[in-house]
Image (cartoon, rainbow, N blue to C red; front, side, top):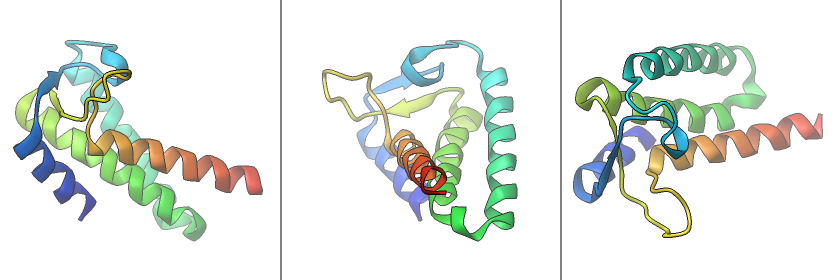
Length: 111
């Protein structure tokens, strides 16, 4: 459902395209970013299956990775639309990744 929400929002609200990663790094390295995304996705799915207490943060990470991976595969770039003016433009998939990492850090810290 999160991936669908990401893709629908990008369809209706896209303002810029990003051929790089976060903050525009690695612009033009779409194949490398595709490979990194696929590796990250496989690792997240592995731990999602293996460790029940990590399901929530990994759900967000998997959704975020898939949302931007779909863009990279079908368009060759990621579609961004959330512009806070003081931060680089981003999308829901990027937000899912940040939420997932924050929850993951909290879980690990509590252990």
